[in-house]
Length: 308
Image: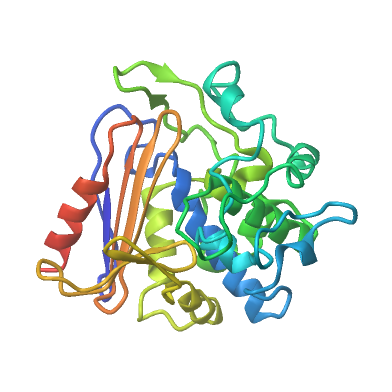
């Protein structure tokens, strides 16, 4: 668990349990990866490599058609879960629950993903209703990497990790620091590899690195990458009492917390994660766990305490 505040020389870090490198251990951060993917979209749009509202069809390989229902699905639709696409591509759900349960996405290489695109039709027109889609954001990460001419991991390293000094973040980070994931009853479980869907939840990271990434989204950060990242904070859809930006869930100021919050939770087969930043207060909080018990409630308690 970590807390970062602007003006403090170092983040506060705490840990407990058996971890290979203490507070410097590497965890699977699951869907917190989606905010990294959204930041890549905003940064590449800043350079004109893609447009946030480009239709998905513009960035597909020749011969691969994107099904539509109503208007065409855009890159922004994928990042804000407004595409109408199902949570998983066609043919993925049953194997992921049975024969491939231990590592359900590992077989999804680029060819397999691109073959599934024409067969996976949207359930609703874009913007009709919020529908959380791992497939949609994974497809976004794949398209951004394809546009850049490199793998998703290489793209994250080039545009986020190296500029921010994140030394232990990527899709295949280990170096003796990788924690072992556990199921609910404490049994060790296999690590996940998201292959071509890495943009939806395939990153591994440390608490220190995630806090460094959250600092990018605070108001005190003024680098070109940070200015691009602010596009991810613009509300694009309403989700119950929250709003949805690009990647981020956005909680408006309320009675208990009088600051806007950007937050996301994540999970894989043996890990859970929570990341939250209050941009105006320049405070960030991360909680990483090597088991499957949710950590969002704990993370919000820590954020409330950090904002006092």
